[in-house]
Length: 361
View 1 (tube, rainbow, N blue to C red):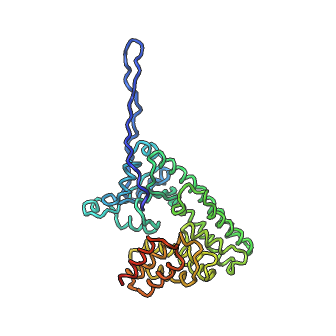
View 2: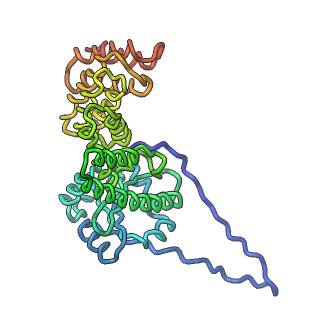
View 3: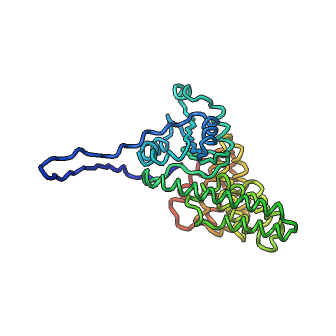
């Protein structure tokens, strides 16, 4: 995660006391700062405590000995009195993923931590998840600039939004199960698509909204490919756009986009490319590099870019991936040719990057 750099703020406060009658100065009656909150290092123990207390569980995924933005989150938010005051409403759990042997020795259950991170799709650090006492994820956040008060306020909004989304998801799942006709099913699926399209409803960035209950609604929206296979009602294309935009799409949606929009007239191939690029970025094994490059070639062969300024960087990344990760200079040159044809003209920076690809093969 690479949030924008913000300057360090130096805060100073001065307490000025006016004299009282008789010239005496009363002692300051400053309110005591909240005690530093306690964090469970074990997820299962923390969830059990949350269930017993009936509180939301806040889990931070961090790397204490290597992660710069984790340290920023701790320094700017988690160590501040504003967070300590809000923390009384939560059970706190910190799952550490350190690099050093000394820090690793302090982690009680690293295998279980890795299992939790994988099951929740955690690929960025820090990540903060809110769990209902029953164990369902309500929302996701991470480092955000602006200080402790802003972060705590955002956290409260996230929790409220997550609970509303959970209730919406449950209602849609019940209605879908009860739908007795294809038309009734399509109506419920359209509600899920409507939810995904309401971008302004979420108090968080689009990349973070779809944790927990959001995924359940996305799973309903994904059934549009079966409900409207030829896109006769426009439901499938709407659903694909919404799923891609909310980063809730997967391989099935990529295949559907290629089948439905082989010439990229709807712009679905472009959106599929970004999904493949993110999958390649998140996969440390390298197994997603070839599908990412294949997606770029599929788009390049259409000869069409509906939003060149937005998708050119993805094509550039695919060309570098083809050359450096796959050793496929033929494909790299094809993508460079496409970029020079469809990309912005007279862009010196772009041309320098393209020369780096083809001039050193």
